[in-house]
Image 1 (cartoon, rainbow, N blue to C red):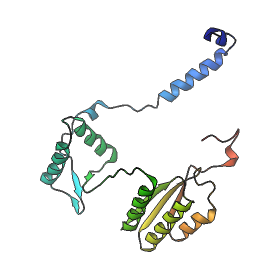
Image 2 (cartoon, one colour; image 1 turned 45 degrees about the vertical axis):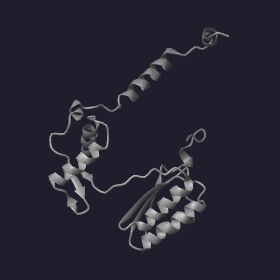
Image 3 (cartoon, rainbow, N blue to C red; image 1 turned 180 degrees about the horizontal axis):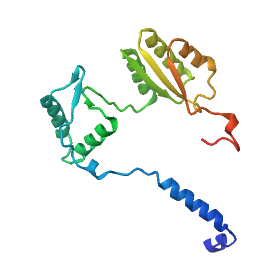
Image 4 (cartoon, rainbow, N blue to C red; image 1 turned 120 degrees about the horizontal axis):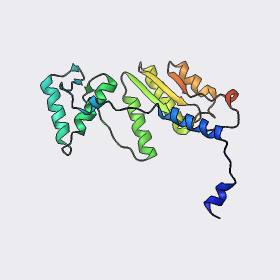
Length: 195
């Protein structure tokens, strides 16, 4: 069967085609634009904050030079710094660390260790939280909240749909700020669930 014979029986009204074209054009109007000025390197040196506040220009330059020396020569680093500082509106901060965790048990253990080491605040987002691992997280988060560390938790509405309300009430009762992301509302469902 040819493609022509499949489509020959399909008739799409002209008005529907125009509406679809209009929707497509409207949705494309919100695409981000790159301002040409963003492509230039920053005129002023990029400030870097340390644990005690802003670092000197010399110390900031030394840190940035060390970071630059670790990669291949490219102007993308300067562009990235300029864009990042423009978007965030604050300087870079020294002493950050990123570690790639590749499996569940090691990831969960590293997260629990980070929770236990937190001194000021914890910002956590979770999709599923009421399983056995979620119970371990809940205990660790409650313990830190009781030690004076402010815990802020965003939970996904779909991922925690089966969680008993008591699970989150227990967290909230200790002072943990729990926010449900994109709450599921059965009253707004017209023709079934669409994730």
